[in-house]
Length: 178
Image (tube, rainbow, N blue to C red; front, top):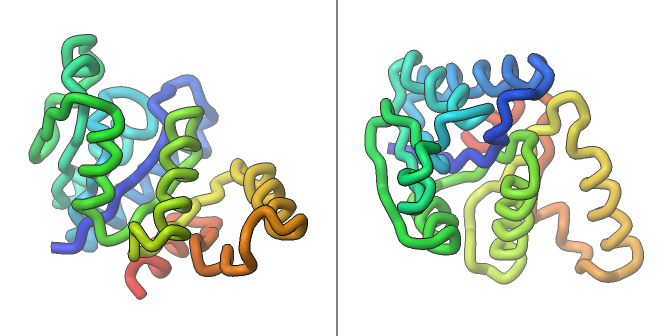
């Protein structure tokens, strides 16, 4: 079974455009029989992705540190739940289990996960597609910063090989399926 790791917001106080895109992506993943790997969160886009994937017939594996379970932040309806000790172990397990990564809009945690997986690709530690789903142009400032890093030679010119940018869930699906 093909597996995709999805990074996204745990916030529920966001514009409905982000929620709609997450739900559409989850539905496409479920219908395509992709196994979704995520952080097992019970809030925000993480919950939306999980619920939509499950409703569409897919499976969702959540990877979550014990302290988050103890705080009640864990989605209880996932196909499988993997409990780990640390956030570092969580990110490593999610990457190890995936055949691709899609990053939806999110806050510090999502940005940190995205930058780490891009770094792993640059270092040859992760060999699968990384797709940035740029809903409502959310990632434009980050992409501009990465372009500047390349222009000013802080990054090698290979950056175009490290990630792809999708504007819609359908486009993101095409990118991980090729």
